[in-house]
Length: 247
Picture 1: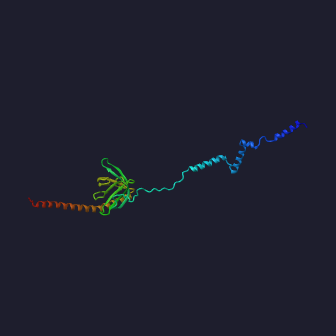
Picture 2 (picture 1 turned 45 degrees about the horizontal axis):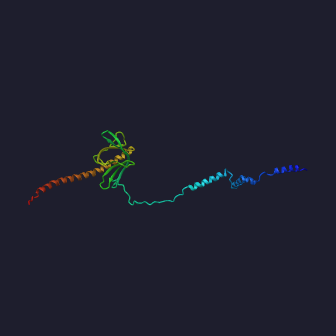
Picture 3 (picture 1 turned 120 degrees about the horizontal axis):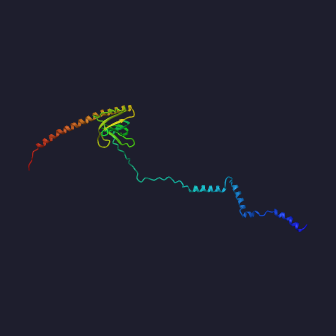
């Protein structure tokens, strides 16, 4: 056999050998990539990209670090302590309530000949604990502003409204709800006819009781005025009878 044939027979053996070893692939990242895959498989990263999962975990960790820790409860002591309670004076402390009913009040204006709403709220009859006199007081809802404040005197007359069976009207010689005594005509409208009847009965009862008290006061005042009138002439006579002295 010639040398040429030996050469040709060895050529296939050379071709069957790999052209490059695994170390050559590792130079271009081939081997590292396989190891990385194996590492990912060992970790159990079988869903999605491992890199994306690690980035999400890092982002979640960063959010936890950015959160502001809860602060402890801080208690600040007041600089000035209020030791005394402030009491609201309503000028009703010396009175007791004998009647209370919710209604709507109107006032009549003579100039325009019309009724105007004065307020809605509880209407009360308050009896003084010492002198026994009863006055009518009504305050508006929410604001509690007084819209009626007067005694039920003997000269007052209560009458029904011609347009309703649950409304009453009367005239007042001296209502002080606005501060100064003022003569006004008012009316009240209640929820139903039954309440209107109860209100009238309480109103008349208070007037009857006040009649005795006001009559007593008028009698005492008249006696005081009479005694004062009798004392004035006596003082004048005594003054005339005094001797005149000269130095």
